[in-house]
Image 1 (cartoon, rainbow, N blue to C red):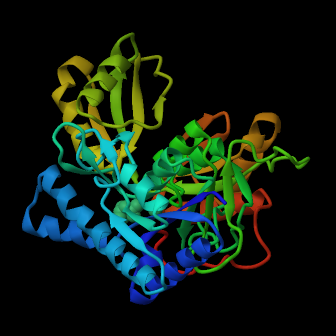
Image 2: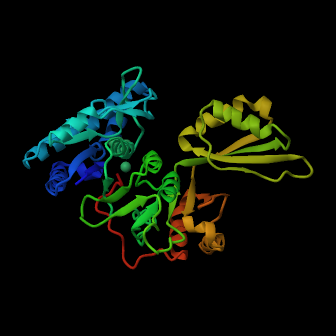
Image 3: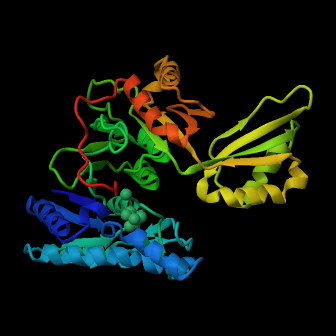
Length: 422
Ligand code: ASP
Ligand code: MG
């Protein structure tokens, strides 16, 4: 039987008992005749705690040292997991990202994988051992320093290694039974979906569904690696993320695959800019130079009398201060009256491949929001997504209302086995 890559998130290895449970699960896979390679995250909240500790020591820790610190979390869990597997009579060998051949660029805290040379992993597998690889870390090709792929990056390590090792499947183990039509912590009536396409999963991951790292889905799509998202705490089949969920069956895709809310964005309005060519270019050039990631953009119709208009955009809250500064610095060129900003917003999104061919989706979506008394501040769409900006306070109600309006509510409450969604 073929190779299975399994990734266990932080809540699956939060304490000694959980590590022993995961070890049994890995041993069972091996005993069923598969080769197994395991990717592991740091235990529980370790990464957050190390992050907090760093900021107590230094207000602005250097990226190189941050990566050295954070990667320690995965070193702890990988060694402990290897020990627990040994006790079950199997040979397990732990490897750092660097030892596993994960070669990245040098962008500390958000490094990109540029090559994978998994020779040591392949020899371990050939020896009949179970390699345990530290998630979310690699080594820079030029500086040779240790890097991290960004928060949640272990999923990407797992898919990348699965591709490099030509695995049959990449299994992502988490604390819920799979991918749900909404975060079951926010919408109790969310239901698990059996299959979902890479495209839908990409949209969901991009708009705040936390179950999979965005880059892991991009990677899987590019190389056609099937992902099976499932629970560490049960043996139930989870959700398969594949190219075409309808393939091989006669089933039609459901119109909607899920709803999600993202609370990590802020909204900035540039009040009273001239409505003439070059203004938007000046605004977004200034923001690009400051490295601000823009999401939605709206320009109002200009008032006849003044020939002036407002431009509103959203960006990660973490970029907001930088964005405001960059706009002030370019004030002479852009020529605006004032800037306003709001951190207490949410982006509520509806995703589904069936939107392409089913009329009335927007009508149902906006009626549900209006019936729930939710005020909409901005709207954006893609072929398979509708997103609106609302106040942060309105987001939970907006999610529930839309979920119900599209008939997504399950009969019973969704099971959440642990609390964090890692
Ligand atoms: N431990 C890292 C984090 O918490 C990586 C991961 O879990 O994917 O972000
Ligand atoms: Mg995760």
